[in-house]
Image (cartoon, rainbow, N blue to C red; front, side, top):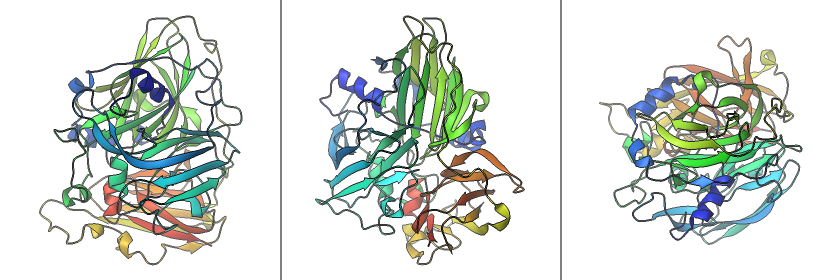
Length: 494
């Protein structure tokens, strides 16, 4: 919150912000949990300094639908924000003086109209992470558009084709890590034409911030030790840019639509759900056949989103918790049942309508391409002379990628094999498309769609999708320090 914000303003923002996702095999914990345990710098004892109570929106109406925003200004500027409950405010780069940026919320079929204004010292863009949009709106500086210079502005208008949970951020490859780390992002929710009845619709942004003793963002972006290894890991984990844990009240038997987003630059975050019945209903914005997360645990790569339905206890006075699997466990959100029973206590299961994605992909006729992921700075290896070339795909760093990985027409099936020859878990974001995660023998796929994919160290992961939208489409590292270090490529749809 800005340094002078009131508690009521914090509560309003808590109700209104974010999203989050994962994929089923990452749900098992696995490599993500290993990395988290190794780098558990967020301290559970610090997180207990503050707890706030938030009133739910009216029953059966998703929060914000009546106030859906389809036209607004987004001005990027430096803002003092109280990330920690004590000490100095942190100087962030924010849209419209709020962190995360304003929740943009429209219904499917509505036009989104934005006036982007640049009030910071670096060029910026707006990338709509996860949205299937025309290529000219993908917002990749230097590939799909020229970045917006400091002091300039531009108008952006398009109609999202898919309902779901998405996010927006600046995407100039060389500076994306710094701009996201400093807070230049927000959430876009596109509501279904008939949203499901829930007691509360909560958007939750998780982020870890690398702060110094003075509460300021740690300087030194682009350091070889960050770019060439696990990335820039933070030491202060927040919920919607507020100190955790947050407390929320809900009617007994109520159900909550929880939209999760991991906005961290590099940290995978595993979540454990205590005293809830949980079902995943969408991944990376796209509806999925509902399923419970394995062992009540969900892992989110940077950039991942997940839509969940939480069913709360039918008795009053019961608290359910969402805990980050960091060290001894870091409580993030406590939901307490209070008052009269919910009108949704006996409501049936929720299954979201699809977003006009193909029921099948013809793998036999698909164009196939390998993406060999290489690079990094391992112990004992010499330091690369150029940080922008630490990582490579098929031997080429993004700064040298003059030719597309492949070129094909619209509506064509494509199978990509991500071959990870590095020592690190990789997370790759497919721009402008949604993909199926293929089984090891290409004999089927997982029953959900993704745009941000985990590739464990030493493993090969295959995805399949149908090309759409003429233009140059990026495949970029979702661990943003590696993006600036060369871990990206692009393909062309003609």
